[in-house]
Image (cartoon, rainbow, N blue to C red; front, side, top):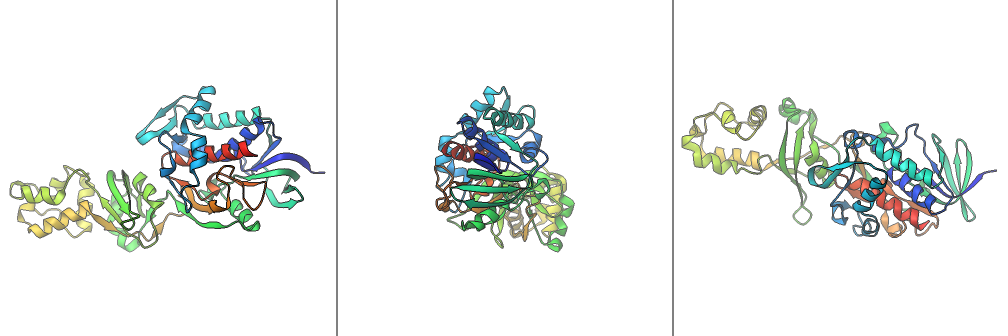
Amino acid sequence: MSQHFDVAVIGAGAAGMMCASVAGQRGKRVVLIDHATRLAEKIRISGGGRCNFTNIDAGPQNFLSENPHFCRSALSRYTPQDFLGLMKRHGIAWHEKHKGQLFCDRSAEDIIAMLKAECDAGGVAWRMPTRVQSLRREGEDFIVATEGGELRAGSVVIATGGLSIPKIGATDFAFRIARQFDIPLVEPRPALVPLTFDLAAWQPFVPLAGIALPVDIETGAKKTRMQFQEDLLFTHRGLSGPAVLQISSFWKDAASLSLNLLPEVDVGEELLRDKGAIRKNLVNHLSQWLPSRLAEGLLTANGFDPAARPADMPDKQLRRLGDTLNRWTITPDGSEGYRKAEVTRGGVDTRALSQQSMMVNAVPGLYFVGEAVDVTGWLGGYNFQWAWASGVAAGKAI
């Protein structure tokens, strides 16, 4: 005979453990199922091992969705301060870094241990590692068929995430379940991901791999244009760093990027104003603002002679150099894909869900939370905040 639970949560990551712990501490009989051998690997590797667990400024404006107002309810009912309160009760020290990003002082393991302890406090039963083979409706219940036998549950929460980072166990399980129950999907794609360029066209920039600098980066048409001020990193295949990871969520195929490599300097105006007084050659003069290897590489790649002196160059050429550095326009040909993506954009269409409970409107008792849902946060702790908030919303509603 199958074991009976009030709630089966499939996926023991951030959203799944949060949901299971809340439901369990409300007196529900909860089972938490995951196919992985190690608990919460995505938490473990985040933030360089210190877990960027939320952003103090997290709000609906920091999330993307085809249904942009959907996330408001869950985010307003479980805030970064709520999560900090939970951490305080467990004695976990933290610190704030760049732009409101919060990290553990010690290790991401502290977050994992906290969530595990919260689940244990709710009497959550664990089935791990256990692979789910199928899910079906039978009367008022769901039957969860696993490699360890069948489980019966009144409600099922899908918290298996998206497609990002398959090497740590990401699968399309959530999307397969959505299709099985005729729940619409917003087409998934990699987000918070490095962007790549045509190999031949990128060759002049390959020697710049490893160089990083703060930039302004933009993409999109006028009404939908997005801009970020973050660090850019050159790679052998294209561009990465926080600036590109941020903009990648908004970038669309065949769209261009506009980069200001020197946001604090109007290069063309500076060169024209001081033209007669500049004794150095181009590369040495630009090295006051840029790493010399980057200055030389950009000059060469864009057809300028690094050894030329500004005093000997036509004004038109100096203006073109200014545009190259302040308004560098390039068009990626793709991204590094799910293997390097931090999250998946798209997923279960939120118009099919209740914004209060995360339950599927047409399938009572079936819930989707976390990254499986078409709600994608910016880089910087926002996606964890969505995991906590959506998990709590479902856990309190079941």
